[in-house]
Length: 532
Image (cartoon, rainbow, N blue to C red; front, side, top):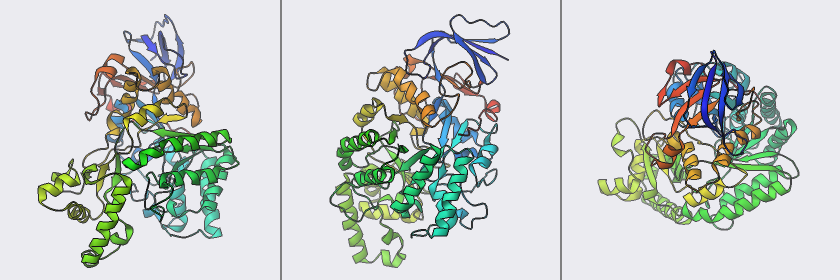
């Protein structure tokens, strides 16, 4: 049945000023857009002046791992509530596809953060197979990058060495075949195994593939902070800037479409690097590299509990760890790192330790140390041990509100969540209201204009990732629509573990959210696979 959406304020995704009009839907497409439309056999939906945008596109997601779950809706529901209809998945090198079918290293695919475990529909070595599996069988639309980490792990596991010529050819062959068969591009995860073992020559070959097929290369850089475990020298050039320098090297002399993932500055001493980061991005663009970056509207980020724990300590036996000299060495190193980064134990919030340890969740290491009468370090090491070094934390600062607001006005900035629903513990707040907060910043004069903000999360992202017939409210385009109440968006206090201001969502013409109610049955089949 056709649907006639009447009396709405239309932000069409182009960045042009909003206008009042009607939208006629025919099945999964927009049949017409204009004033005083009429259709005798259409269901009329009168919005009474509410605002309508193209369905929001999350340009940095890992929801390919959750689209293949036997019951995927719980993992998509909070994103739909914030108006997101389409995801660019497979980021940070950790894609759920892009590996040899008979690889003996399947357990390494996903980098430890994700993996083929739990209730899943199957195993999908290629992007094509994954997209076939989720097409019409997933709540939202899915495009997928092919991950360098997944392809490299497929041929060499997590080997810390240069690939042999044969391994290199296999890995590049995997990436190329996936690019030819529908992948949106390649993603690098240079902070994760085995991506962190790739040298400059290997990365240049990956970049050359993206140039060859004119597809995007997204990059989780080697470092997001002033100091890190990625580089041995603690002094000298900031590690985050060294990571950007590496991207300059791999893209030099090309017109590579380079996407710097999650532009964050972890730790207070990293914040000063923001101006030079922008200078490098601008210089890349001036030299012909199509460089851009993306952000989320959050000050914290999710990490593994061992984020400040050196690998040499993790590799020791418990008896070795408890030796006074090793504890002293660890204490000095962590203290120096914390000082150089500009964050402390009160900045590390426990998200999940394990079943039976729920009492820790939502509290910082410093709070728990005081509560249990321990030193901060001893409390932290206890948490590591009790979680078998697999715990999860929310920590910061990853950025500031001032940086977010400045980036919101930058024409080379796109929006994303970089979030996923966890099975247990405290959730990443970005799953709840990240995109509505971008809208709120616009309405309160902190960000760009509302038209420009809508464009960044719709048409600009669709253009960047070459997603056809989405991202705009245009005749003939797919009917992905997000309806929001500007007054509610502007007046609501955010960060309440729920979305706000989003009234309705249509995915491929199907009404999936109406006045805060999800249509679970419709969402079983509402999403489509997007091949690039």
